[in-house]
Image (cartoon, rainbow, N blue to C red; front, top):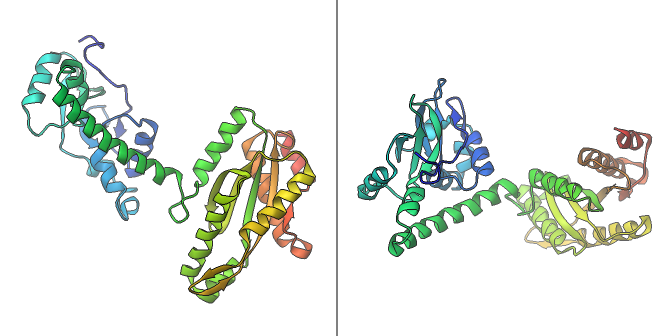
Length: 327
C-alpha cells in the first residue's frame, strides 16, 4: 500500500520485558504517537498501550509510584487492531467507521507479510486521510486531540518539574544548560544549598521544611536576574543568570540573591529562618562543558558551606577547577 495513502509512523516497539518507566520515556520522545506496541522476542505484536489511557493513570495521584516499575505488558489496553501492509486502506477505514468502540486515538498496529511489527497508525490518521471533508467528524477528532494534548501537557510538567516547588527538576535543568551551551550563550550557574534547614525539620517537622522550600522557590522565581530556576533535590537549588559582566557584578548578584531568599519566613510554625551557601561557575570563561560547570559549582558551594567562617559564596578557582577546564 503506498505510504502516501496509508500513514505509518516508524515508532520503536517495546520489548516484552519493558516496564512503565520505559513507556514514559518513549511517550516523551514521541509526543504525537497515539500508543505503543509491545512485541515478543521475534518481533510479533502481543499488546498495545494506549497513550491517553496510560497517561490518565500515570498522572493521577500516586500514579508514578504505582505504574513506573510495572511490566509494560500488564499496562496494555484492548483498544487496538492489527492491520497488514497488504490491507486496503479504504476497506480498513470503512470497518473502523462502523465499529462503535473505535475512537480517534485507537491504535492500529501495522504488521508486514510475516506478521512482524512494522509501525503504527491510528483510526484518527486513517479517517483524516479519507474523510477530511466531513466537518462533524473532524470537529470530534479535534476534540479528542485537545484532550490528549491536555494530558500531554500534564505529562511534560511531571517529567520536567519538581512536584513540591514547581521549579525545573534536575533533568530539565541539565537540558536547559545543554541548550545554552549549544547556542554558545554566556551564562553563570549558581548552586545554592540552604543552611540551618535541618534544624527547621528537626524543630518543627517536615511540613515546616516544605513551607521553607516552597517559599524559597517562589523567591527564586521572583529573582529577576535568573532565567532558569531548579530544585536539584533536598534543600539544593540552582539558577542560571546572564545578567553579569565581571566578578564584582557577580558578587553583588550573590549578595542580592542571599538577601532575597534568606529573609525570615512567617508561617503557622512561627518565624522560620535559614541561610544559604552559593557556588558559581561561568560559561564559557571558566568551563566549556556542562559536566565541568556543574562539578565546579557544586564543589565551590560545598567549600562555601563548610569552609572557614562558613562563607556565603565561593567562586574561587582551584587546581581541581583548572583540571576540569583541561578535560
